[in-house]
Image 1: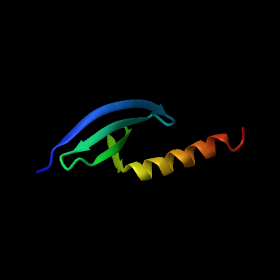
Image 2: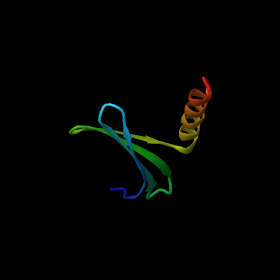
Image 3: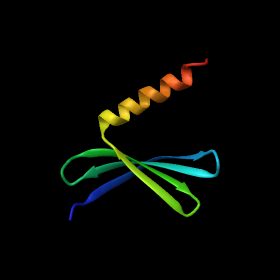
Image 4: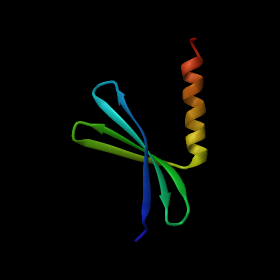
Length: 69
């Protein structure tokens, strides 16, 4: 069974009563991921991203935010 080392990065209150929690995940295999946990009431959605995917998402969000400014 693999072990994970979790470090909380940030928690954000999002629209429609959602909470988004970001965690740094270090796996036993030295793989590093960022975990996004979205809480909607009692329901959780958990998504892990590798560094390349996180960078792509970061670029996309930055472009979206600056598009109409």
